[in-house]
Image (cartoon, rainbow, N blue to C red; front, side):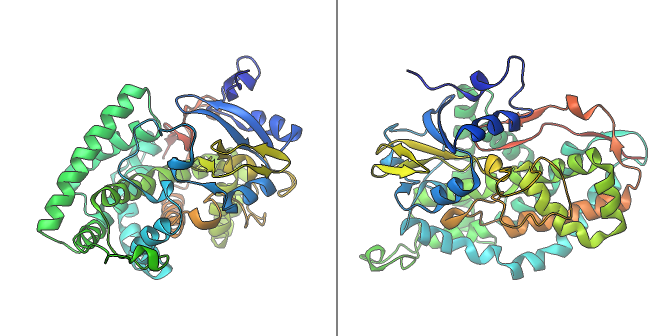
Length: 407
């Protein structure tokens, strides 16, 4: 018997993309793990409770490498070989190559540039009237930051984002395939250009690593001992950092503004006490979970997860969003509360694949909110928030637009 999709499990007429939380809550109340079908992917085991999610994310028998999957394919739209689709020791080696670019010290050094970009974007907004905060503020900020970090030229950034958006939230298999082909060609050309003329950007450094292959036997010496990158790994690394480096932050900035405007008491609290900004970001990560599911994991052997038997080769999808609203871990989980101790949420995942760019996303969101609230004290919705369109794919969820009154 075929497993149901989330849409089939939802009440008639309910928009799961706009509000998946009641469906997850109903399933979670019936048990921590359920068999569901994911369109364009296949059937998998969906993990919904906090404890089961943490267990799944740290279970070494659940692997990210597709070679452990009975599916045999990821749909053909991932570029190269990237960290999300690898396990130790390969994952360890790949992560170490870029981890130094996302340390707290490096992010602190970026803060003045992020603040300057916020100021530029805010100064370009009209002083009165209505604007879409996604396209005019929440999107261009992280796109510019990650493209500057990697070395993507200004003129290419809009095109890059359209490809990225088509890959993470595809309108169809055809549009995703076209975006994958376009982005592959673009990144290949950019990598070749930076290989010939290094400029000190992250992608340039990675291209340099690709010119220095690991010594024979280095991979066997232990995790992280092989410094080189092959061509497929370089392409995969560029793809992952470019896409993950901005899509999640766009969603986080816009969803946090949305939550604050939906909860004027919490907005007033934040305005009265700016020291709560860090709490506001963490609570939004918990409540809104811009990355609402992990990458698929695959059982390398038969195992039991929260009382459910998982056969070898089966896919497991961990719902970070559902786990972060588990009432067993967070009382009143659907309430936006800046004074909540939200630490421990799974908004950035958990374990070996915890989001490498989390410090950058936190910094960008906090600075974007601080600048916006200071510059636009009368900010409010320009339309009924219940009717705002949400974009939702297997892994990501965010507002398609956020019309606000800026005067």
